[in-house]
Image (cartoon, rainbow over all chains, first blue to last red; front, side, top):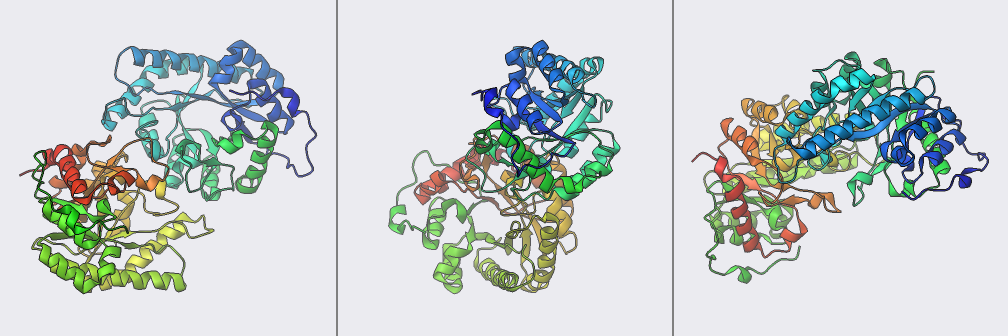
Length: 305
Length: 305
């Protein structure tokens, strides 16, 4: 990470800045190059009330320190991002992954306890892609189910919800063999909803002809652990991981999905998570303000007061 | 197009060349820079028995001449590629699209009649993306259904099957709002199966957790108008349209999909359609031979004799 210094952030809120929606949460991935102190400061300075943290910047300062910093910030904690990556067959690599996931569960529990009231102990899980040399998507998916089965008792004991995230099908083989919300719900169905939920991320699922039905099902089954928004537009960048945009800058219609999420009873914070070189190159406070502005324009209209 | 001259193709079949599977068909998109004469010659010289043609090289020589050339080649005609692109609202652009689709229907009928016995009058349809400035995927999908409703009587009169092709979800907004085989089947369901079928293309649908169930459904409903194979691997190229590979060069497991297609009763030719700058830069006969070799390795083992 290339941290921006905290000092850079001390500037008055410009006249064009919007008052952020009270349910907006900044996912730290949006300001990837900010260290934890800078991320917390940019979020509070912009008037945003919640944050989703990433593991690397938390580990950079250590969990206890991170929890103290989060508590001092007064921010709610919405998710911990991310672990998972457990599609490999049994062996040392799989054991290392499971151990790392257990650590992530502990981190999520500790940080949620340190966050302001309204925080949630949600750990986002990205399944992982095909193991090297494998073409067996079906087997990889079975190993995702197995791994969650192994982690679930630990998550339950820690009061943490494992939030399985379907990723766009363009990542199916190299990053996440779970590609649709329906598929994630089918995997989650074996477990209690407070232990295994799903991440509903507009970027990954908006294209799905079944998306609204799947969101409705997720709500009915009590599985929406976090709702995340960002936009899609084409052409995709050379690295297709980095094609996420401020809400409103692309072609996603946030209305139907957001209204369906809210109608399902979802009452938590809504994260904006953007992976985009240009956004990452923006000074963090400015990136947070732009995020809040995009959210106000493209998402807030669909949130009941 | 940058045509390779026909003369370049006169060379003996090398010792490493395989005898192509009798059901292999070369989709002309695989040798995009070959003109029609070169494409037909490369296909026959390689010992392949069938070809799927593209509209532009057919129109380059004129339909009557193309039909004569195809008849003289002795090849079976497996599909005509492609039309569609009818997601825009009513107006002159939509009328122009419908007119062009009517022309494509006529082309498909004429070419299928000119091909060797076992030819099929199949016209592949790609729906099109979001109209400029629109975020309304649902509306665009409805307009696909409307367009097919308008074209279906003409296709039926001409004895042509409109073969709706779901494209990978990464193309959902800029190229094809039909993203899954199940969705294509839902649209086709309003029409007779000999009039509206579906294109089953491994590249576009292999990631779908429902892919085998959807292929089974497509077979049961008599809708598999063409089965097309090519491979997927990552990282995707900068232009994600061009990430298609020879069968066996990527991570798709062709076994389960191919066996399910065959078990459904599909008895037509199987096309290989590859969009890939490197393949396009290969001398056409060599590209056809490599295609046949990949097919022999990755697909033929799953075809009953």
